[in-house]
Length: 255
Image (cartoon, rainbow, N blue to C red; front, side, top):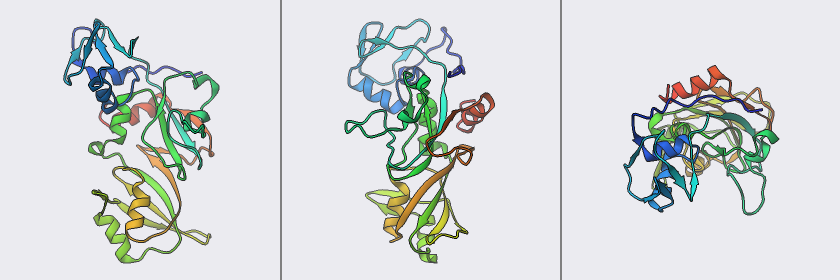
């Protein structure tokens, strides 16, 4: 059964921003909560709220989303080894397998969602949580959470390609870069590299490699926020233990 880990104390005599409160209730990241507010789907003490910056008293205010009361939840975080051909969404209209389908049955009814994304053809470490603020900080570039990937390329990188990715390349108006690129010895036919990113934009590595004309064969995320995927087999998951969870929260300034 899932175990409970308390969120930061929300005192009744101190107010917090509505989007932060919604995130603490597991509704979504702060950005997602901002969209809910802007769309008029949130009410405070029975009155619709559409302006940002509104504050609430957690133990006194009544907050609803789409007519349903929301309350702070205990923090729950799982690390999952996502295989290829699994998508990182809560649900899929095409009924493809999602990362939530990998969770044990006892977790299926909880309001959980993946932290960031790995594209369908990528594999490796993905976190699943109900803590919107933790999810926001793990994915927002401001918090510089390092993520390490093993990337298999069809051909060996030359010096110009490597330097370009370290310096940063432009694609679709975004600057994409790696913090470090290190060759990894392998017996296979393809060339393997460790790539460390300080942020993770949509299809970051694939787009970056496309710009420098490097053909990607396989991508596997192996490390994130001090967590390592190597102990888990594809499709396996486990809950983060107390100290482990504390370390992750401390890494993004929440503890």
